[in-house]
Structures are given as C-alpha cells and as structure tokens.
Length: 91
Image (cartoon, rainbow, N blue to C red; front, side, top):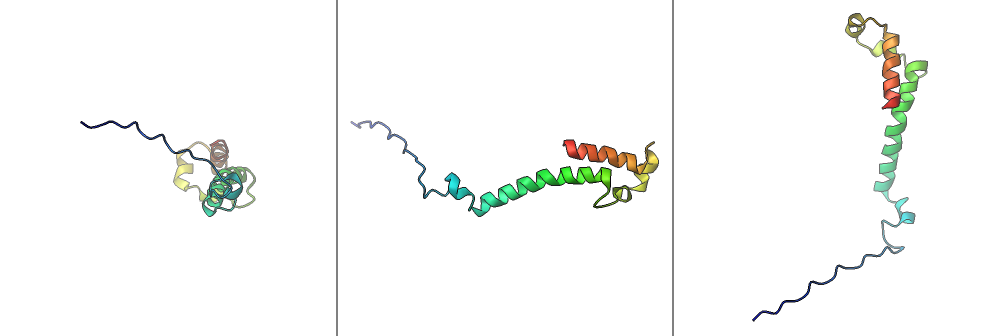
C-alpha cells in the first residue's frame, strides 16, 4: 500500500544585499537603466514636441502637414498643428 506524503512547503525567498533586484543594485542594472531612459524619453518627447507645435522653436511644423489635408479642412495648417500639439501634450 502506498503512503501519501504531505507536499513540501514552498521555499522562503528573502532579499539579500547580493540580490540583483535589491533597490540599491537596481540603479546599476543596464536593463533597469534602459527602462527608465525609455520611460522618461517617451514621456518628455511628446510633451516637448507638442509644445513646439505652438512655439516653432525646433521646426516649422506647418510645412510637415500634407497640402491635401489643408485643402480638405476649413482650417489653416497652423490651426491644425495647434490641435495636433494639444492632443500630443494631453495624450
């Protein structure tokens, strides 16, 4: 007759100072650094480019809008870029 054994308890996981996921060591992990670089970049870039749609510091964004779009709408290219910039900042 087979005897039944109780299942073993799960192993206890503790964080040590040598653990690569410890908060102090995360800052030196290249994957963690890449994650934050991309997170900050993809947060700041749309806001900055959206603001530039209003101030034309980096680029004259009106020239990037296809002329067919301007002809089909009742607004000028500059007014359309105001809307695009606002959407870009909010999103």
